[in-house]
Length: 447
Image (cartoon, rainbow, N blue to C red; front, side, top):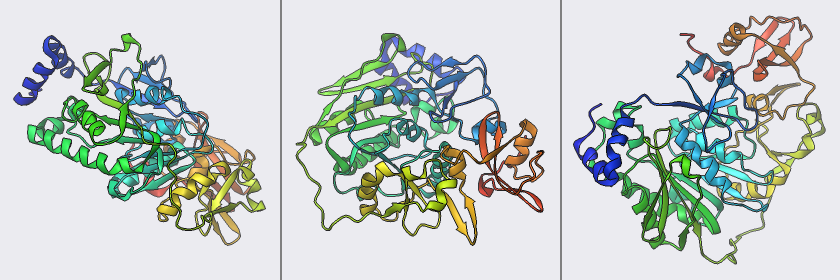
């Protein structure tokens, strides 16, 4: 691996005697890691080594073909770089109270960190997953649905669209030069330049300058990049503090984790280097809004809810259907928990075109077509029967095959499962089985 000379010189200056170990680490193979879904975590992997800072994170001994694992398709785990999972520990350190909150993941795609944030939602919270690039937004939608995360709201807004205090916790996983991807993606080496570092630093400042308007008094802003440059990291955090009424929040880490503490003026941040942790590396810092907590968001009119109670016909579709509300005039019957109605209304009042990945399904004539989210989330009624299939038939199902081995012959809806992981819906009719796995997400190759 031939690294750019300017990058090498900078890292030697930045790390001193540690630099040779840093470059040696970059010459080694990248570790592979997964994070089990906190709602339904399961995998077929054995004797896994745990990621120290994430209770659901594990290293694999080698990188398998994930697309041939039904557990992956069923959202039972997410393939995620281990350093990124430090967010799990950081959020746990915030010591949040029980009040309802709005969370905002500003640059959310593909959704790995969104899934970590979802773990910390109370039933009364909502999580905005925002992604401005449409192709990445589609991937984010897929991962939110497969994750089965209730109370998530999907947006595709520029940071400048958030013009007033709305969120209690904001994550800015900022676009960066991607130095932490150098040993995994050769393109990260080819595109690197000092000019690109400076350009990314400027972009990060612009994103922050817009996003800070959305942070409520007393709220937390978590900032991260997968780069090592001080320009994108600790220097930016110092700039954020100078430009706004923010203070750095210290986070405690066990010393043996090998996480480096960086300081610049009043700013505190934390760097994961690949020669000190088993991962690609990441920077993260936490800031708190010091402005007065007496601020009240102005209302231009009385707030009307965009949700209503589910009709009695849903009692056999959802488990404890009275715990949910459905979006009015929504053909997919988008859902939130009843407790999250207030916070969801606050978001949808400002962004009425926002999408809600959680849905019950569509009514077509006298028939009801359950959504894929309903299968993925575990909120479906327990009376739905399951068809358990082995690995070969599971892969056939994921290809949308209708050749399903089962002794079930009663017409109706069934859940296809593999090793206790739900894969999606099947329907038995007088013509046999119909496969309702989402067409756009089907397995396209078994190679």
